[in-house]
Image 1: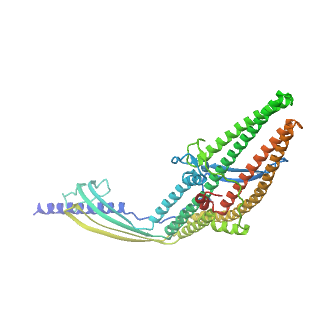
Image 2 (image 1 turned 120 degrees about the horizontal axis):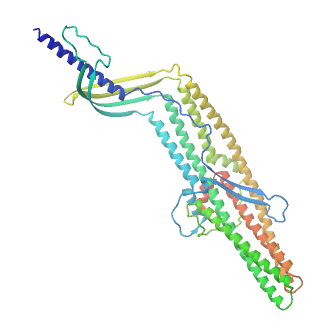
Image 3 (image 1 turned 90 degrees about the vertical axis):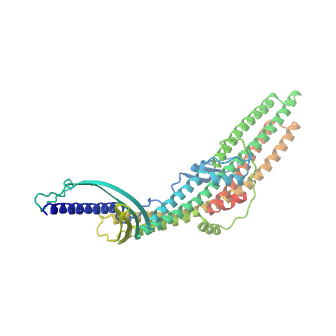
Length: 515
């Protein structure tokens, strides 16, 4: 009896300690894998809601400074900077590039639209992350644990009440396994408003992408017009060179028979050399313009291709200014994007204010635990937590202040954008009127200078005058041709700028291929 009691107590003590350790180990495992979810905090938006794209496209019609004898008083240009001046490598083409094909390639491969397309995808991914905070999370785990404990090292000191009997301080090794499924769900107004804010940011990025398409059309269309104008200048210079050669041959023949002086022959030769050099310069400019167009449309940076379209002067009726303003405010994608940015900032402010409100979370699990699968038993737990924020060190107030600042900045940007859109439309109308008048004057000037050159050559043929007047008349015609080419380019650029200002450039030009 004396030996039976201690051994029984020893066995019971060991079993008790082992069961306590198994239970504590299982609870520790459970507590590690299903820790309570922290309350959500409001997403912080950047101060400015405007797109961070590193590029711009601007069409300008600046007056020629100072006095000039030319009828061309406007200096048109398209300034393309940053991402819009580059592109991805696209597939090959037939060797002749039409305006419609150039615009379509630009919309697909230009780096400005590609970058904003990826930004829209990134915003969509962030929206999915924010949505995940509102959906249930379901996880499973399988754990096998082998453990040996030193009770003394853990601070557990158990004294046996029976003299001569000691409880061991080293327990184990022992093992247990845990197969468990866990489900958690949060109900948090901050997370809900974060998701609604990110959804508006997705919409804003998609609208910014549509606005980038308009800028791509302005950049590529303007570059195509520049190539057309540069090609027309080359043709004009070639025609002037042919005329100069004809006059030189004529002066050479007349010099043989003594009808003109050597100075007239020398003057004709200088005119030929000047026209040749001018032609080389203009051909160089044409090659550069074609390389610039290729860079925007996903083509190899070379000038070894031809353009198949022309853009002659074709006056088209335009809508009234007030109608154009109404269309611009209804169609401009950048305006709609700015409005979406305001809605996103409002939701972020609501999310920051909701940090002061209670939130609720539910965590549950079910599984089996035991020393082995054959000797296991089901266990479960269900925990509902109501979190009531009492004092967070001013974090909620700081988030509210940041959200308010972002919202006010976006409202200011929207107001500025409305004024910018109205300025764009009015400027485009003014440019359209000025360039249309300039084309008419340039047309008349070409007619007059051609007639003057013809009459001057007739006088030179009969010996009434020397070739000084002929050279001057020829130079006047060359200048008139360039004025007309530049005026048509300026007019077509003004029409393209008006389409961008109204917000319809990407919707019509790539499909029709006409200005």
